[in-house]
Length: 494
Image 1 (cartoon, rainbow, N blue to C red):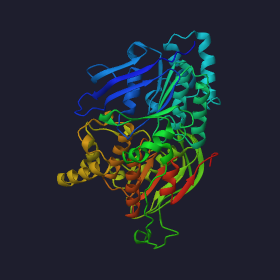
Image 2: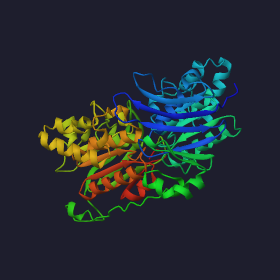
Image 3: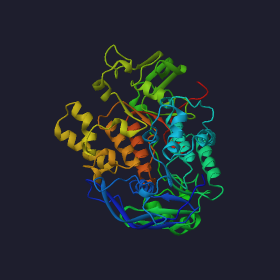
Image 4: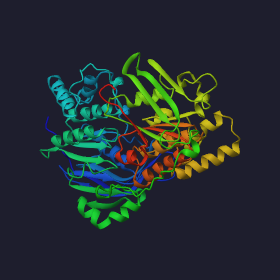
């Protein structure tokens, strides 16, 4: 099956989600020729993912939103060009549909009626290209880490043989080696110029050498920059940085993170050896009774920011969720120090949800997994209402967090309709609302533009400086530099 890279055209195109007063994106006029490789940039919420969804033909009909202008693949609407595009979305778990690795990669091929004798060679080749060749085809997809899920979905897109590859932040949750592995796999796939590429990535350095041009979109203003990377940086770099756009040559941040002494919050009065808020001794962690890490001796210093690092699949998220009391420990012990733990019950895994609310707050890797309310404002208020706080206090705290997290215009929006970066900021807000002593964050900077990254990191730093203990699972080197007071590196089963 030879891929067909069709011309892409947006003609004064826009989309407004149902129930929203503001357009997700508007006035987009753009052409991408067959075989071109485009890096699509823009601030968080600028409509980048919406553009990719339009090209993939998955935005839905009139009951899901309002459209103006046209999107064309060749001379037809994307909804009529089944198999012409392959989309890898922001959240890989949204695209994993089958329980076995091989079956999931084969799923797209089967739906496109690829001959049976072609499917499994394609599946094996795609898994090899994304660095998952060591997994058996029958391996359970539920046991993959977030980064491994991302690579699995990319393998499924590659196996389909589509002429247009659409990638929505495909390396956001990958370790540095995985980022290079995926980028190189995409480069191999595109080497013969028979396919086109449109890739959305806030941090574009890794893709800059591979693409022909960069296109920047800005909500209601449509395309605000279009051209070779070097030209755009030279001509509009400062202007775009002010809008929150991460341009490849402007990757550094200007955030100054406070390094206050923790001594005022530390009963021992020591900067070098602050009292541990949470300790783990000979800890074993895993899923379904099967340990992935054993013999862990860890401590989270009170009033400090700890980062948990390591390659994808090392057990970082599993360890963090166990420390947070959300997964049962499989061996050893976890204990929160007095006086923060309930009397006589130091183990967080034994606490009820209300006991966790003011002690340990967790931001999941997939924000949607913790949304329970119908609006952004109500989502932030959930924990406060569970604690039966006065309504005036709830209203004040919600308003503060909406402003701080740049979510005020979206206060009445459904949380599930937000962009990936907006969902991440909302998930952080829901945890901050109840002022827990320990905050556990899994990939907190995923999907953030230059401005929201800066503000989110500064907010977390201010919480640390006020005495809150922070624990973050992250691959973000800039975040580690800013907030890595203490580091736990997991790898090789340790």
